[in-house]
Image (cartoon, rainbow, N blue to C red):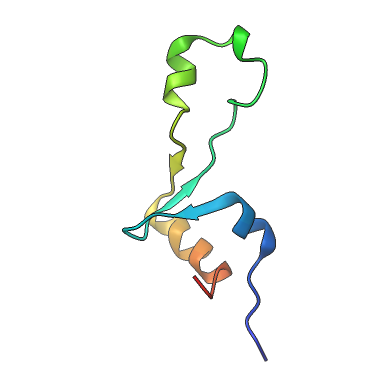
Length: 64
């Protein structure tokens, strides 16, 4: 039986060169005129996932 990659996780997650997992951060697509400069800058680079969540996500991405 082949291992399948979860397509929802594949679309939402990026694995860095060092093996860390980054998620796209919320609140940066639209209605940006109502948000402060500080909050927009804080959400710029995405969110690095904790070690416990990294293990769960890597199980759902067997071919990466």
